[in-house]
Length: 275
Image 1 (cartoon, rainbow, N blue to C red):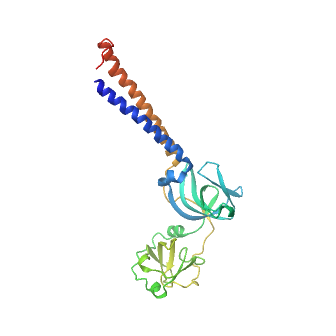
Image 2 (cartoon, one colour):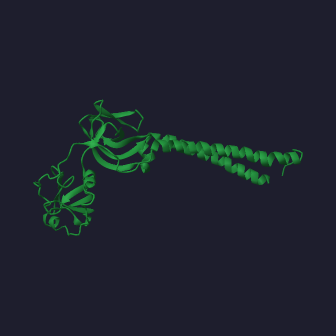
Image 3 (tube, rainbow, N blue to C red):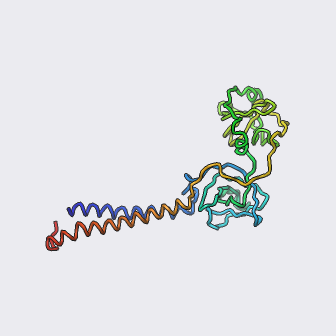
């Protein structure tokens, strides 16, 4: 019986340092928030207008850290690549260049969204305004075949196009879904093309930059998450609590094993019997 007890005790004591190492890994990775919690962050890819009561917002190394990396003034636009919910507040991951002396090295930091940023109208907002107006594209890209180039638009009917994409290779050009405006022009949404994400093309008139703005951008609005988020702060506390519980359970289990299997045997055998 003692052989089994020693085996169980060995497993318990081997698991304790493993759990401690896991806890240390969690703590060490706090300085790299996105690498630690990237799987729980949600892709955003949207532009926001800074509109804070204090006149500016702070870019932090991680949500709630108060470790200032930079400042963005009211009226400026900030692009948020990902969002997360941390201890009840929404935060966004942005990239920025701190100063000219940094040789234009791009840094990443977090800004609090709630109460500080307003979301600009974009392809997401257009989708929300036209949930039943999209359909699968069944054409052959004839317009773009003829021009070889096309204007990229933020959404159909926007105030102006973004830029011109030239020498389009149709083998890598795929329309996710299409939309037809009131004038019969057909538009196609492309998720990614030549480093340009989430853009629209007027398939009927690829190079016509004089298309009237039939859907101009409204004023920025308060952002409401389109995707459910897990609260990372709460999850992180739960993970650490789980580690403490597991370690405590192992310690208590070890004490019980000693009392049940070791002490009674010593009493029955005079306390000096060993196998």
